[in-house]
Length: 390
Image (cartoon, rainbow, N blue to C red; front, side, top):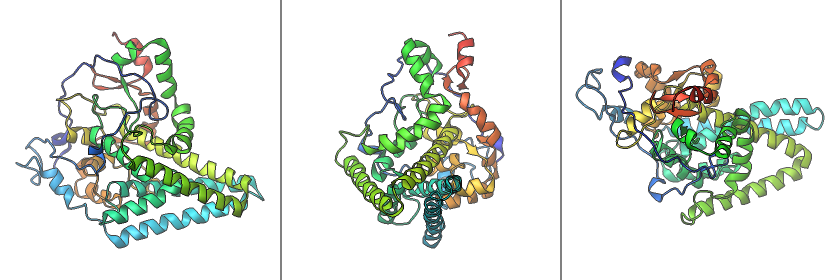
């Protein structure tokens, strides 16, 4: 078994990034770009560049990691169906109980929206695996399951899948920011911005905006139109408009069943809570101090996957509700591994537990990390950027 030093982050060359990007319309409100069709398919890990001083399983073969992870890629139909049922049924039950309870005791109804949001988050994680083609063995089963779940998560499946594929293809690449990710400026770029644009970026990175206003904007408004893919063919439009239509039908049906007030209280609470948790997870998976960012030609897919994605160590219950998405570095190395098989990889290759590992307490400190310092090769806070020489 390889030791952790064998997998340690290689030295990276510092590169300058002279032209600051223009803040126009980010992930929650700035910088949106068109996603090419070339990245609309599931993203696969390419050969991982490792030293040969590794475990016997990896010695002498730089393609060993993709080969090893390929053995975990096969989904089990029965397990996938079970995972879907133990997530969907409790979600529907909790949502129904919350809507019934809110008429008699608002606080009880609101309390029930918390676990309901947890199960909606897990449904989104299943939709996420469908987007990677890893939940079922057949692409059509993945796609139609993902589309159906998208009505519940307010996320148009095909549109989201293309944007998320772009994220996997370019994570940690300073030259390819702005699609399917949380926009991150370098310290030099931030200093070169006008005062108004600095303020816009500071507002965007404010936790109240990122995790409060952000999910409302993203799930309730932004994903109603194919922003960033307006001119990328009919698929994004069909995806968003069909999802919108089905959301409307479901909404009208639920209002007829439980009433407008109960529906609004429960549905908005569940969607916003689940959305906030989802954005938080996405944030800590890539926005940690020792993450990886670089420019071409230094940027390498495997290095960015292994060192630019965290291993978010969570308690068992949260690990289950988040569908093991905290094992994010392995997920980025091979996105075709079903989420319920990711723990098998850590079990068989425990050295991966020490790469990019962050705890819940450590993750709370990641909120202040907002700029990439190319000299120090780590994320820094606004205060650190102000104190450092330009």
